[in-house]
Image 1: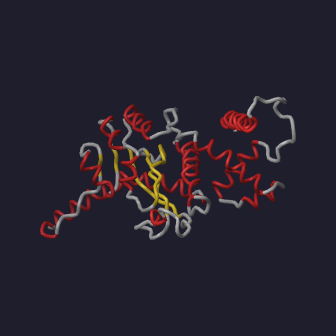
Image 2: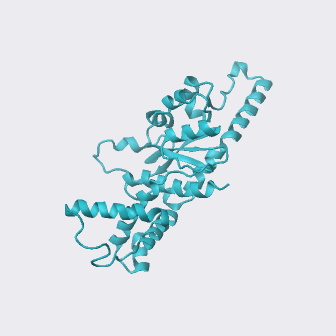
Image 3: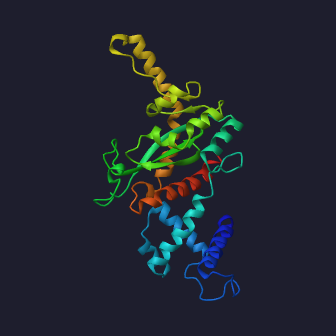
Amino acid sequence: MAELAGPWQARQESGLQQRRGHDRLRAAGAGHPRDLVFTDRVLVTLAVLRLAVGHAALAVLYGVDRSTVTRAVAEVRPLLAGRGYATPAGPRLHTLADVFAYAAARGVKLRIDGSEIQVRRPQAGRPGRRAFVSGKKKQNTIKFTKVSDERGRTLWDGAFRPGRMHDQTALQTDGIDDLLDQYPDVRAEMDSGYRGLRRDHPDQVSVPPLKPRKNQATPQAVTAWEQARHAQSSARICVEHAIASSKHWRSLQRWTGPREDLPETIQAIGSLVSDRAAVW
């Protein structure tokens, strides 16, 4: 509450000044009292994010109009998303560049993986409607990329793209190639969907080994491949746990709101999850 109160008040003042076109004429607090005080606005937002409680149900509980709850969520959610991700070292990470700088300074080996969340299908006739159809899920989805450390602590959520785009393409669009070149000491564990990054950065990116070809699949080669694949999977599994920590929040199990609000919601939840994980 203490962390968000200042930014929330600043946003309110800025919004009022933009609508009025001049400085405040009355003292702060004058006029009709708010239906929901700041503390209740934060609690309402957390209930929506964690449990996906309907806005109408919360409006009944607090004795306000449904639009008041919707407005409260729209005010508090961007503040949560903008907090960044907590780390055991103290500084909060906001961008992928921050993550690589942190990993280089602390000797952290990154774990990176993509995930997707089902969303509503765009209306018929809308441009780019097919872009959300995921070839893997056979559903309309939005993809995002999760970065964690070796303990499964979330360090960043980003690279939000429609479900049709490949995980590697989404991450490359956010500039991971340049960051790997800029920080040559940073290492990352990824799954087989990132073999292109492995090809371009063989000393930094680790992916599961290829299965031996049929003409080379001797029992010894198959055993060695299975052991190497299992070892790489064990090193990478913590990012799957980090993804599960975010998807335990009911809002991310299936997104029913506007698609443009999902990235902000993922970042808000990731920020809250990182607070708890940073003390491990």
